[in-house]
Image 1 (cartoon, rainbow, N blue to C red):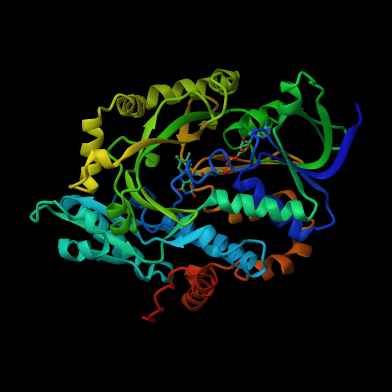
Image 2 (cartoon, rainbow, N blue to C red; image 1 turned 90 degrees about the vertical axis):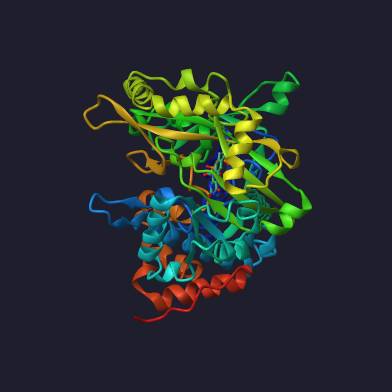
Length: 504
Ligand SMILES: Cc1cc2nc3c(=O)[nH]c(=O)nc-3n(C[C@H](O)[C@H](O)[C@H](O)COP(=O)(O)OP(=O)(O)OC[C@H]3O[C@@H](n4cnc5c(N)ncnc54)[C@H](O)[C@@H]3O)c2cc1C
């Protein structure tokens, strides 16, 4: 069968494909781009606002990003790095608001202070030292610390209401935090791209991809509408470059492509659920995101948090996540996702992870069988006067965490970040892993462009700088630039301005 020819094919209609499509269209408007989404609409999996927590991850509140070194000092390199990356996303979104690609900022980003909360002297000491290490950095200059319940009440009254006044708690509070609707960003970008000739065909699933002798790829695309009507002919598309933005199915697509770069990789699915409330009194008083500390042995993504959410101007509050076991890699995936992923190259890593992470598996199983009383107890660690009748359980998206085989090819371990993988000739690229993927989508795509198009990047750099003026610079090294950049993006995005820099 004849194959349609395009320069670039996008697999998947999530925030990563949208961001990549937009950036490439901006840099090389003469290239033809075509996308495929297996579901009837884009942004229905992890990027959907109801399937993630909407935290604009900037290292302001995620305590698992900070590591305590053996000598007791704090290693804050990760929160700083994530914040740097989030500023890059803010710059691109600001540019596209000004350019009219993204609508009113309120439709996708809203101010929502980020807090961390801990209980007991040991963790209070940890939080204080984390804050002391961060507050000198210009990206964290607005962060405050308090272990005074009356001060905490001003920031988040629900954390204190009904709590024993003698109980020792402490928080950090950063007013520059945000709540982000990644689904809205995805839909707005795809609407814009469609208007400019970049179509994402929905209900179309890429079922296979093979590399041709000239380096291009032929994708086999199944049409779910036609299949339902019994007209099952698939179409073929030939693309010079493929961005595999299939989310939880990204590894599966790389395995179908037969690229050796993913040998030894596997995925570990963790499903998530949140308690949610729209109770007017809670929603009006809880306007922050509060992250706690994960329990010993618990994975970072199980950090409990109580989050204000603003979705399509409607406010709600989430608490969770309650992790669970579900073998699918996408919410609308297949029950056979897990067994079909197994290869000789990754089986040892999977077995090793199962053996080494019995505590994690026990914790996940424990969460599945949690009684409503146990769930309420967890919620009340944050909000002591919470009443279960105000809350209902909602299912969030699937996280597909990376399992990576060790360098010696023997065991393997579970990884909690995201990883860009490209094939040897740079014609196929993907991103594996979950958080903080959506918040850092823009720097992830910059890395991908640099790796896959090394001969174009010099030509593209002036255009990239128009959109991301700090491209190639480190804001932490330049307090004035950090302040001015955050101030500019805060003005455009209508979010809280940074604290002015104080030169020491
Ligand atoms: C519970 C939870 C909470 C999270 N919280 C946060 C948070 O607070 N902040 C944050 O920044 N990130 C968060 N994340 C992570 C974030 O949601 C993801 O990193 C991001 O949405 C991934 O975007 P994506 O485009 O890669 O994947 P997705 O949005 O999952 O999109 C992939 C798309 O590809 C489609 N697809 C798959 N295979 C095919 C195929 N063969 N053919 C055609 N289409 C295909 C799927 O249907 C899907 O629409 C969270 C994730 C979860 C699950």
